[in-house]
Image (tube, rainbow, N blue to C red):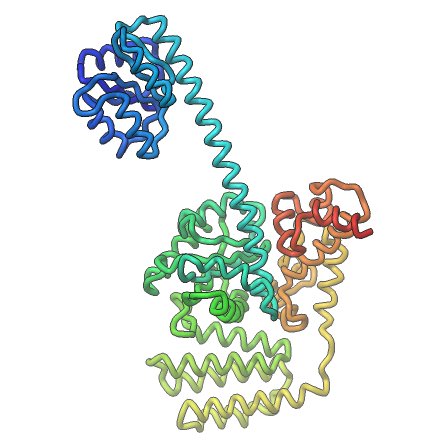
Length: 510
């Protein structure tokens, strides 16, 4: 519906015109003003599509009103009407871009003909505006995609290349990095809808960067996270929405505010260290940055650290065990309320399980005696770390390649075309848990399993692009992606150009 403003100092004239508009059943919202000053006040708070104004009015006449409207940056379709014999005014009106000079008394036929024309002009104007906005949106989206690719390359590499381009993100102040992880369809099949939902929570000014089908990076304004409580509320909203609309669980890590690209890279590395903990929680969880450490929501972090320690023990990752034990001891030291017997019992139980997993029970009694004989947390720590060093020395001689990782890679190479291929489907095939497979693959290769799947598919897609004439959509399906748009976006993130551009360059080089 369009809005028309009728401006005339004669109430009867305004009423008559309104009756004519309703008589012809034009779908218009009608607003009235008694003079030019009142009309300008209406423009201040109401969007006006059509201005119909008398020429001669007190305070501000029709011609001057149109001039002031244009000065104010408004651009309605303008119609002037007045009595016969005022042709000079008509010339001025035409110079101002007025559609038509409507004479009094108004004839119904001319009136209907004029407004049929005006409404067609409104529709055409709206169409052009929509096309213009859509073009701007596409151009902005293309610019953002290019900028986000530069940022991801900078964050994921050791070099400073692409840092200057990514620095432009900080022109309007600091940013808070937020990483979302999910192994459902959130970041692939449901991405377009989910991205809109993220905008509703974080605001359209946030940079939302879909890294791959399991991880998304958000760079949000600091105003969203003034306190830990507010940050928690934002995370709760995101988790609730993800469960309610998409039946998906989320693992969220919120970092510290970053004022430049260098601070973001440091913070991003800290966040990535926390992502491994997602495999030790079964439901949606968030971690909040708190003076360099991370706080787990509604749960004792000690349990999470212990689970990670046991996973490291299964992998014979002794450095990982020492690192997680160090975090567990730091957590105990920082948090009041842990009794001496509670600490000794829990750390002894974890050590017992580690020795069982490493088939080193013969060393168990000595370290348990040392733990229970300790008079401080420092002595408990020394006993535990000393045992791990002994276990590590004994294990170095029997270190072997991880057969499980090799089997996972073979399965990926044979089934990458299957759109249902995922961490969980591979784990089911190998009769192990997804968490165990993911952590073991990361420990052995230094790479997330889901990222390895994406990279392998992209490599196969590159082969198809350079050796066949398949369309991009067909290539996407051949390598396991049903959504061509998502495949193109993922290809750009990995390769730095669209599939079409990559194919063109490959043929040119050939």
